Image (cartoon, rainbow, N blue to C red; front, side, top):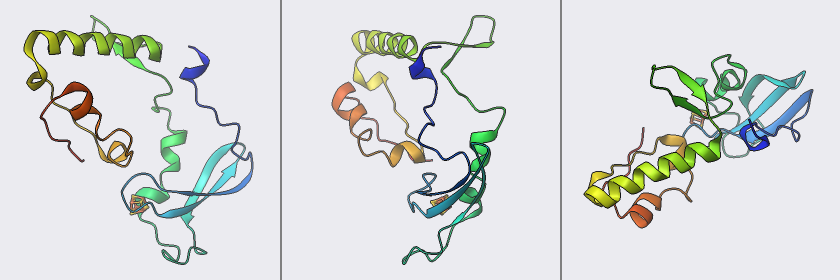
Length: 144
Ligand code: SF4
């Protein structure tokens, strides 16, 4: 795997707390993350925030499990002919996907492409117009 296939966590404290916001849904609740030995161990709402007053839901409070789960994907995967998923360089994966999308566009046109963006992607404003503008697909965007 190349360096771009691993997550840079050098700005995270090994121990202590860090303020952030939850990115699971549109509310972006302010959170405090407690770190132990370089891993998030506890998350709770930021009581010092003047708007949220410490509010968070259970999804945000257990979000550390995304980081520590043994099932967490740390790099791109590709399904092989035998059905097993194997690591693939992200740049290679993007090029392969782009090639297949190009084939569909050339052969069947933009209506052959449907796009779906789940909640975290929907919050990324830079990604929302991509399918319409770049692929010219008329498909609406989805939200999970
Ligand atoms: S803590 Fe819950 S309500 Fe707040 S942003 Fe995260 S998922 Fe949404």
